[in-house]
Image 1 (tube, rainbow, N blue to C red):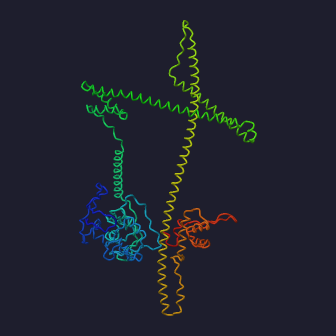
Image 2 (image 1 turned 90 degrees about the vertical axis):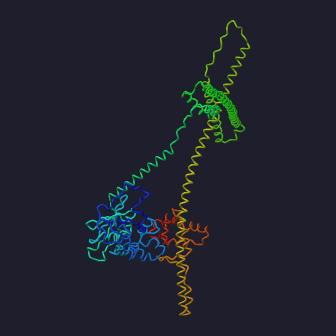
Image 3 (image 1 turned 180 degrees about the vertical axis):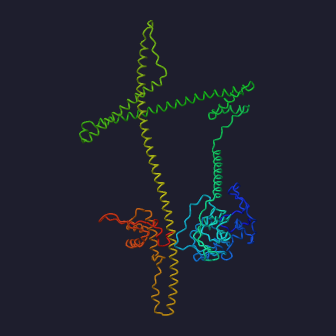
Amino acid sequence: MSNSFNPGLIGPQIPPGRMDPMHNNAPLQFNTNKGKPPMALEGDPEQVSSTGGGDMMGQGFFNSGNAGGGGIMGNMMQGPMMGTDPSMMMMFNQYGSWGPMGPNNQDMLMQYMPKEIITLKTCVLYPPPPNAPPPTTRERPPGCRTAFVGGLPENVTEEIIGEAFANFGMIVSIRKGKKNFCHIRYEMEESVDRALFLSGYRMKIEDKDDKPNTGRLHVDYAQARDDQYEFECKQRMLAREMRHRQRVEEDRLRPPSPPPIVHYSDHEAYVLMEQLKSDDEFMKASQILMTWLERGDLTKRNVNNFYSMIQCTNSQVRRLLSEKQNQEEALEKMKENFRNIFEGILHQFDQIEKVFSSSHKQRNWDHFSKAQRKNLELWFKQAQEIKQNQLEEFLSSRTDDDMEMSDEEPSEPKKKKPDEPFNPQQLQEFLARGTMREENDSLKCQIEAYKNELEMVKAEKVHGVSEKESQLKILQQAMQGMQQQLIQAKMECKQLENELKVVKQTNIEEKKTEKSDEGAEEKSEEGTTENKQSPGKETSVSTTVSSTGLTLTEKETKLIGLVSCFLHVHPNGASVDYIWSYLSQLSVNTRTSELEELLLRLPMLFKLNMSGVGAGIEKKWQFVAYSNTSSLPFSLAL
């Protein structure tokens, strides 16, 4: 097999002796020369092997037919539709292969390329009839690199097959069957897709029409075990790489292990002592000290250091007690503040009752109507019930709290000894204590009532805030959906504007050509007769005729673009007056009759929908160009 590298083959190629750095193909080596005679040197046609077909990878064999017309691709580029456009000729080089274009663009161009007669050295390929149905193909197997070619002539050889199919990619091997078919294995998977271009062509060896030298080709995907094995190997390699990347990502995201506890030393003991004095680092430092004690690092030599660290730990108790006292003082201040607020609420309740009682006086009550009196009585009863319920809840909760807070049972008063005389001062003190206790209980009940009121107010506020937040979220989602719709509408408007620009440019070019033709006609008419000058100047250059016979002015093309954008934003349709008002806002001078006449002329773009009965009939126009793209008459049908 020749090891020469052909730079003109389709797609990215790798020299045969070099490993592909993008894929690990080490276990996928195939000995294609096993059991074959020695390969012929390049340019020696007498030593070509007729069984293996491996010499088709050589440089010379890929260029078969290039001297006459550039091979298969060279003949295609000389068709009447391609012409000799320099920009299109850049796609092909002198070997009949693809230039700067990528494989995707190659497949697309080959799909829409006109099929013409292809003349090679040993055969001629005639295209199928224009009205023939497209050739059928089976479902592409995964990793397919082998093409099935059927319908070959009886006298065909591997050299002829290689000459016809070598320009689609680097051929690895050709296996010719006994019944006019063969299997061609390519180096790249994309080459099989390109080889389907010849399906339907009629091959004539040496341009002979007899049956042994003619046959209609049928190219299809072949299911080969080698292709399936290589595809499975690649999939396993990708799975291994994916698992490796997943393990690396898991190792990267795994939380780090806690730092180890430092070993004891005099320096570390001094640092730890300073950390024990800090509130922020006390927990970590105490854990280290406990670990040192459990390890048995305490000895007679360092007992003083450990005693100092334990002493620092004990000093934390005083700091905690002082912090607790500060928090209790703050709590008392909050209770006092709450008591004042609740007293203000009760005072407002009293004022409300006074207002209702004043309104019930006879001189004021007579002026109200029956409905107003009924509402006033209802409001007054509701206010009294709410106040009474709040006070009852406050008193009940206060008694429960007192029972929970009292850790010790009240000690029974000591029985008076019969020998002791009666002291009236002690009786007064006892009575004063009872009154103070009752006042204290009443104050506690009032505070609990105020507290309950505040909790209700807070709950109402929290409920209102949660409702507002849910409404805001709904509004945000709606705004996001509207933004996406606006962005999509803008993109579609830009696409329509670009299409209108193309139409306008073609119209201008056609105008220029018409002007030049009319000028030439006028000059010829002036040379023959002077009386025919005035009719020659009456030709109209303000219109443009497309390939289908539609006549559109510059104003009409502008109206078509604006109306298309407007109706695309209104998918349910719009009336002629509504469209006219939109155009008048854009300073476009037109009439409703002209606008309706233009819409009627273009049924492939605009559709009239009528709804209603009798005098209530409503006419609406809709934009239907995207649903009828196959029937558009001019270049808007992309």
